Image (cartoon, rainbow, N blue to C red; front, side, top):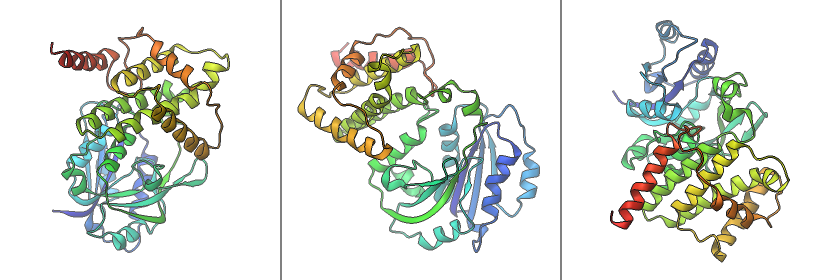
Length: 358
């Protein structure tokens, strides 16, 4: 039986309180016909905080909830993809466990605004951590959250989460949504509450989240994977924009360490080598006027958004440092992904051999 909306919620080692926080925000929706809604909860092979899901289904019997438990932990992107593959809603909405619908009117507003002439209904997201609203999808600021996506648009364009990414998986999916030029209705309403949890498994235990370079390894790998996609589609404008965006982001974070005489960690050298792979993957001429113009343009945009300033005169020193970096860590699991450097390098070697006719 088809539904009007599917809410997809991945969970991993989450407490009962977090699950109830999300489901309570759904069941409190006013003037909405729950017969038109399905909720798919995907358990990414939890090993602790085990929940009695039969009890959850009893408590929330008013809601049509499907519970799926995966046999292997592969990260939230893979879990969301399983949810998508098992969904039947006309639209889908991603809600992470522990987060919630912003108020009791979210689904009522969705039902009134959905139309056959849109692929995405974009709203805003409220960040409980900083007590402010993030700009929505049209400003590339909330990623996949706070948007209702027509499932047919996803299926027809074969848009899928990437199996290798544990972080940046939402950015990857969002970039593919944008590539296919969805028809977007942008609302000023807020639909999503991001409830920052400093005690979450990711932020409490994972090295990526214990320093200022969180997610950078996955970010660079995401860009490499996107460049593969753009190259196949011959979408060179998107290709160049992706490479330059990740270079700008890294430059802004690396600058104090590279040129402020601070120590560069082993982990930062790993990220520099991944950037080296990204440059090798691309056909961008970093000495060209076009590169300089695009880099500086993106740099000023990001500085304006994040209210900080980074000198521009060391850009080419940074590029040369990337190009000079060496692969000293070929057997480590790339942080924020499900792949090793060896596996990533194997892709490059195969492509290089194919280009040479070997």
